[in-house]
Image (tube, one colour):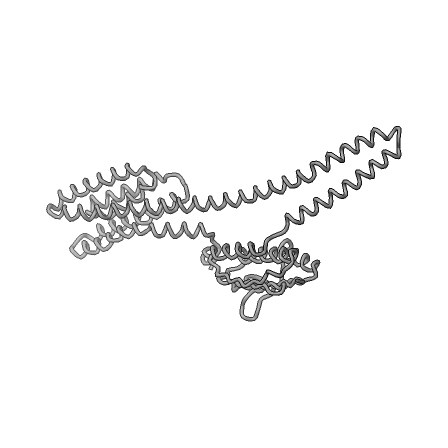
Length: 370
């Protein structure tokens, strides 16, 4: 169950990494042919102890072969010890048991940690040396084995290089998405800071000038100084109203954009999302409040459920979100999540409810006066 939860809760990038790694494990199929070869050798009279020793060597090689590519996609250091041990085992399988299957696989393990031309040179040398050895012990079958080992070597190197390139492209795309998100946040912060600077810069300069004038007139004309201070008070109040208006506009959220965004996020996480929303007649305050509820609800779906389907409907100021991934008590709201939203909705004259339905779904319902 824990393994299944780990799979369900894994990020999209992690799932792609698992897929690429397991697809690359196809190169481990080639050494598996050695077990059948050992069975044939045993049938033909090879001593059981020799067969058992070969199986142990091959099994050790198989187990160690699962590590290098996983280390490569995780950005780890080159596993020199693992590569050296698997190389020795591959040579032992070739010399002692005339099995060429392990050599191409070992080249695939080496490929992510060396330059391509080095891997090609080593691969060519292994083909020549291995087939010279087989020719020395087997004679005319060398031409067939040369073809087979060349084919296996090309397949192993091509699979590893292609999947490694695919992983690099995936990580670059993921990093690009994160960079765009950070850039969007930074630009929004800069816009807000620029608006505040334009708004408060002149107002604060006027306050400072009038305060200085009032201070100069305080000794000779107290009435004039008092009048200047009243002007300062009115200017401060007007500036405060303007700041509040800017902040209110800054907090405004486009409901349609939020619906499109959360649908894309859910589908990217493997959750089918259906949206039916009639938002054209809603006032700006209601749109902003419902957009906030939608974002919080989707956050809960992604973090606290194992949903596969999610439905979002908005009609006459009533928002309903339901999903099939019920997890934990439905009526308990997080202090900084739905509970805070419930207070905001009630302050606007509406209601917010979260509950598990009879058909095993989780429903979030927010009704705001339209």
